[in-house]
Length: 205
Image (cartoon, rainbow, N blue to C red; front, top):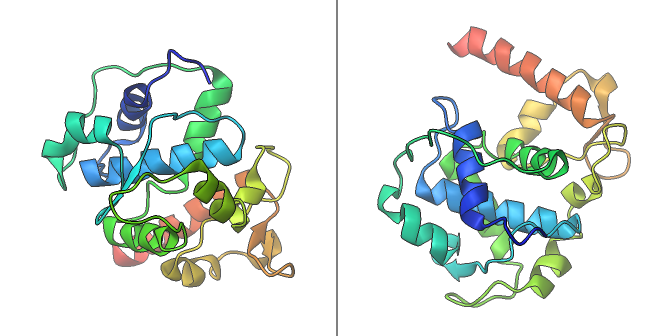
């Protein structure tokens, strides 16, 4: 990891590029997004965030982010005036991770992460160790997406709400013969997702 990169730099990047009316990012949501950047970049052998996360009753918490943004709690954090810049490789990884979580509403995201942390063998207020992260997350289907390759199959994040959503996709784009939903690649998944979102918006406004 580049030692000049801090968790606040990555927070700034996320807020600048992903904070909008469609994807409101509060302090609670920012903590979760940064936790996933830490988890999946570690699984991808990139290790972008070296700062610790602790298991609080609200989920994984980083104290630096809590000190900087804790006052915003459940309200949107103001978008920064400018973005921190990383290498293309790092930005691609951050974008990939955040894109797959940022559209989840707070309730679904909280349910997802609380289900996961039950499997980390970590007591409340204790450090979430790299050993527990690797043991649990490396066995999830999403881990198969790393290292990133635009031509390899894509395994999406699946929440209870996503099963119905994914079944609306053109079934020529995915299969679950291996026991997991798998799309031909990430690009096709995003195209299908945009198509379905437009259809849903047309129906529900």
